[in-house]
Image (cartoon, rainbow, N blue to C red; front, side, top):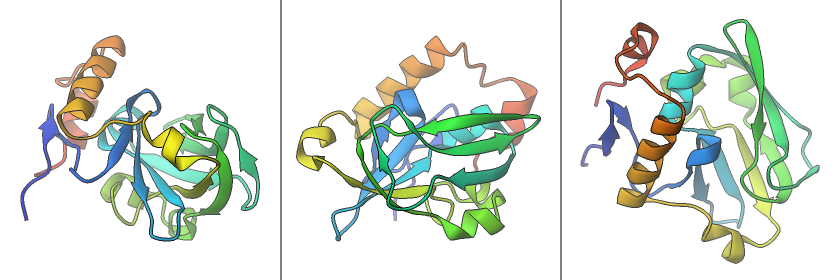
Length: 159
C-alpha cells in the first residue's frame, strides 16, 4: 500500500474527499451515508482532543451548522457540517476514547455519519487528491499555520 500524500508532514489519504474550510474528511459508505472525521490538519490545529460529543441521531443538520462539540486544551469548538442531512450516528468509540481522534483520525477516530439530503449535488463541493493538497495549503496560509511551531512538531504524523 502506498503512503498517503503529505503536506507539512500531515497525511491526506487518497480515496477520501475533503472539506478544507471545515478541516474534515468525508467517505461515502455503501448504505448511502457519509462518514465525517477531523483531518490531520484539524488535529494539528486543535492539539490533544479531550472529548467529542455528537448531536443526537435523527437530527437534521443544515450545511454550516454544528453536528457536535470538540473539546481540547482549555477550549471547545463546534464541529460544523459541510453538508446538509440527517445525523445517522456519532462514533460511540470516541465518546469513551477521544484520543482515537488524534491517534487514528482517518480510521477508528471518525466523528459522525450523515445521510445527505442530496449527495450527488453536495459531492461536487469537496476536493480530493492534488486539489485537496492545494486547498489545504491555501487554508494553512489563511490560518497563518506555522508547521515549525513546537506544538505542531509534537503532533506530526509518522508516514
